[in-house]
Image (cartoon, rainbow, N blue to C red):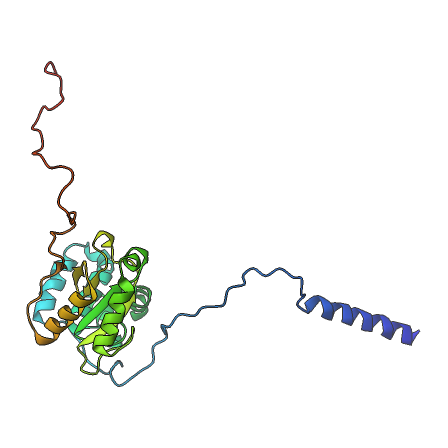
Length: 251
């Protein structure tokens, strides 16, 4: 009787193990490889990024911060967090832990509220970047117009890869998604300025001018004005009609 009980128990355990074992015929939800972000959202103190490094708005930024806060009711001033973080990054060049803590104190909110925002939006640089922050759009329209050649030209000329900074701290190169200038592709954002209709040769010239401190003209480098057709206008070529056009006289 005891041996029969032990045999049944063993069979039950075996059946349970088989149910837990992955089946060769089991359906998987996804066959794609797991991709992990290259960004670390947990802060690690470093010599250049730790809470002991002081930061505060300079006199110019303080005046600008007052203008920003004036747009919001006093009880909702925390809504100014994003423009104030942008202002702080514009002053310091990047969004360090000290910058986040300062903004939290400035808005009288818990620091975690600022951390949540700064780690969510990729436009806040949580690591130091060069004086000229090169963001090359590599989304489909720009790729079709030669964005990969622009990236290659920059990497070869500066001796860095995407995600790296030159040894002289002048240039940082990254690839971004959709700069919103598809009609002027390919395009590079240098800090807050767009340079469009680029070619590898025009890109190298732009880098040399920036390095030399020469004045540069933002916008299309092809000579066209803004988003106008390269071959000139094909519509809206006559003066617009005045008031009353196509309206009945008795109205």
